[in-house]
Image (cartoon, rainbow over all chains, first blue to last red; front, side, top):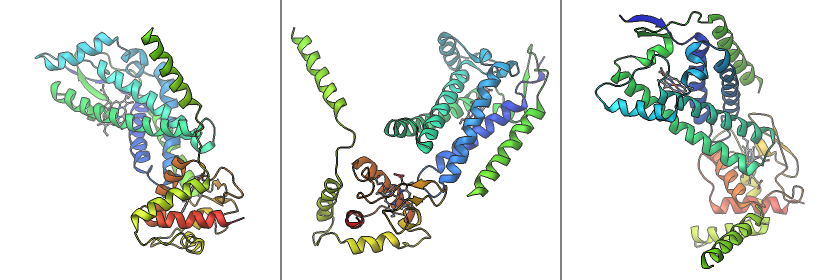
Length: 205
Length: 138
Ligand code: HEM
């Protein structure tokens, strides 16, 4: 019996889409000095979101915890293999390949943000941070592409709309437990703080 | 023994590279480089001109910014970023010894800033004119 269960709490969803938009925006404003203020604002926002997620990975709801998507390499290989077989393995929370993508995205995002801070506030080795900032940003773009492809492939194979789940928080599942709290207030606080920060930062200059 | 020797050679080579200073150029070296490029770009190249460089530096080129918008019209003074208000150290090598000593940095910023101001890359003539102007400032 399939049941509708809550998988992603609100802070995780707010984190996800804010991260996606801030990364895309920062990437698009990186070329010249014209949009430097927007680039900086989105970079700070992305760093703030990642900082939140690092904490939420330990204290958040069940499916959002790092422990829930930290798989052994063999499990990752097994999952990807099973996608090619007639009966792909199914996970309610993150699948093993998705888990790898999250750790990569968080690590790369952190490296991009820290090297960017160093370049602007002039700490660390300028040449090294310049290379690091650019290389990690391009690597992250690559991981995002693979991540989106993975989401689409898994959605088709499992006949399950994963993108919608990242908006609504709900999935259809049998024998799985719903999370008990969605922390709406925390998600609202995050969205509000992000909006206020962007408005104040970008109208200041 | 032979392979050991090879290893030692490779190590020595790496060490030599690692010891190379990152900023090896002088403003004159960089200007000489622009001269070579300008000659290949324009066969009738007549040399760089500080006055032309000054005019280029202070003019807008089709949109709202000039080089002086951020670097001010006095390259011996500190500038201010038009978008972030962050202080920019003076561009004239006479007052800021770090300027034009790292070809990679020079190329990066000419490419970026010319894009910001002209929506295209600068020609070697334009870059040479600007550098000649900046080097003439005492
Ligand atoms: C715009 C297209 C995108 C779509 C459709 C999308 C979709 C998704 C979906 C469906 C999940 C949940 C996976 C699962 O159920 O196992 C997810 C997770 C995640 N995605 Fe995306 N994503 C997109 C872009 C991005 C971008 C640009 C980034 C990073 C900059 C990103 C980072 C992440 C992270 C970190 C997670 C884990 C969320 C968490 O548990 O905190 N995504 N994404």
